[in-house]
Length: 267
Ligand code: SF4
Image (cartoon, rainbow, N blue to C red):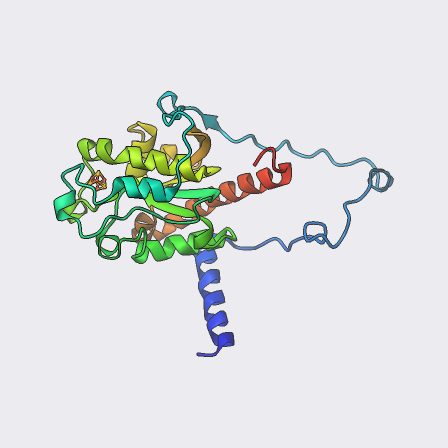
């Protein structure tokens, strides 16, 4: 296949995803945002006459779950490799005998954006990598829709081993495995954690609120902003919900961009 044809097919794929997500138009980047033109100076702006009143930007709704505002590592800095070493050939819970491979996580060890799902599925269990099945392919497209690449972000799950028949994780399994997720978060230090799906969000936030109420809201979580959204596997079954995920992803992109504009002190 020629490079041009492959690029064309990738472009069509992307446009289909945007369409599925409810995107009907895209803003053309301004010359100012592309650095081709200086912003208008104050006197120039004044010469254009009184500015129209602008609606105040909506402040993100943020609430702070009391149980998630702590860092229990006492300031110790670990690399992901150290955390993985410590996990070893883990036998800490009853999922060990039935798993094929531990799915620790993958991606940029200093990612600004971290995705956290519930547990590996069959494909992930076979390959030892997170989000590699059809849902994983959709997650890759979602990441690319906000102008990032999969290798820019870090992706992992609360549980590192597949529950048999993809049943829901049980509390003793979460208790055994979650400390490793906390250490991954402390090592990566993401600015934003995107919790994927009902179970992932409810477990991280220690709540039974449905994902429909949790999603789309920034919350404080272990030094990062956490935003929950629907799981890509759910989107495969309910493609109409892609629009809401697109809204959530735009919030994440806008927040990260605001950190970059604010400079290194903020980011
Ligand atoms: S799920 Fe976590 S705690 Fe349980 S065996 Fe796998 S790695 Fe160990």
